[in-house]
Length: 397
Ligand code: PMP
Image (cartoon, rainbow, N blue to C red; front, side):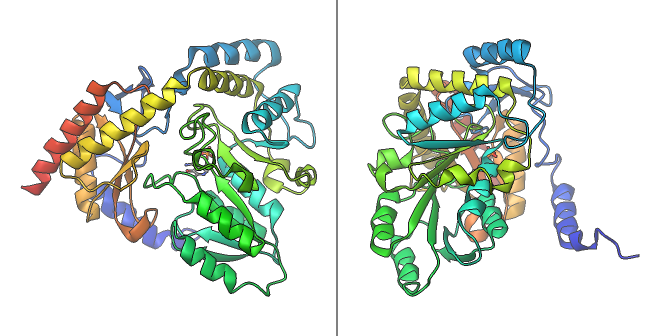
């Protein structure tokens, strides 16, 4: 009999190598209980959370929790079906209308996760006759959506408008539709995309542009509409995709657009059609969190201040961080054993960040990925950077 797991041999070797040198499994850190938005109980210790993506702290919104409890009591806890067959509630429509209005767009489709929003949008928009131009550092959900679509995939250099334009120019005789996809803030590095430049390029070459604002929704732009709002180029973005799982603290994804053709996307997007729709209590919590976000623009200001403080603190500690000041701050290290040791020492000293390892990282180098929140106090940020500094000194010795 052929060993069905034989294909995992290389993964098994890498995993065994990692767990042999790490006192704990970096892929299964258990937050026993969040004590607040910024502190969680890990291994029985109160630990500062700097790896949650909970940018506005809204996973702990009392308003959202109350809305979820009330809705679960009155409507139950699930829809038990897909939007197309038997799972559309009035609340789905309400959330879609609310998001369309928030983004100033004609249409919105919500999905059960942000991952599915990318899969479902990309696979419904393009097929084997079309071309996708993807930023090389795109999230896995964008690559998976590309695979599901069957479209030809061309990668352009990360955040590089010149490279994108060169590749588009070579496609001038291609008969298919061309869809460029970029993110707003990149999840691993915190880099911000030049969406305004991509808009100019797409117009010159008759292409469409989709932006995944998963990490920038609620975070950037005067109203929290993301990088496109910040750069004043929303009109040029054909499709904006994002998630509720970061700044809104719940779960689910969306696509907003002004293109009327999306009405039929509901009938050909498999990740939308063949899965259960968002449960009512999650929709209620998401709507309440969106209200919180709109009512408290100062959360965004505080988040930016905190991002600048963390970025400056880590730089001053002699660590290698990215150039962009954003709520994702990645510290780049040279080797995997060094990163594993560093990450364990941080956790043992009460600071939780994400250990990101190649091949999931750009340039095949390990990262200690930190994400900061509006809810962090300046003291918590200073404490985290002090721990980083102390651990870095130990690793330099
Ligand atoms: N897009 C990007 C850029 C992401 O970083 C993520 C999640 N890390 C997703 C999409 C998927 O979102 P979700 O976790 O809500 O499914």
